[in-house]
Amino acid sequence: MPLYDFRCNCGVFEQIRSLQQAGEPIFCPTCQTVAKRLVSAVGILKTPTQLSKRVEQSGEPRVVQRPNAPNHSTPKHNHHHGRPWAIGH
Image (cartoon, rainbow, N blue to C red; front, top):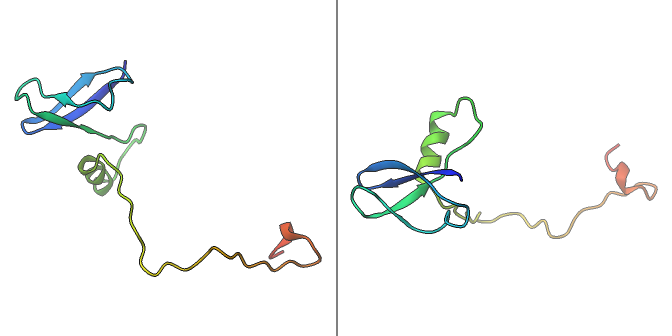
């Protein structure tokens, strides 16, 4: 079973849980408040400080809307001699 990290009011703790239980709420064994699961970067030898702070602060991804994004719905084709795979060659 995987080992997960959780954070609550009193600090960080680890808990072994099954994959089915991974998304379920868990209570801190010390203060009995609901803890938030931490997402950590695995397999990185040296994580930059800014990245590790960002990962620790956010467990849920956010969707960011870009204002005035260019419209890429109509592709521009510069076909030469009927060979679309040779664009720009």
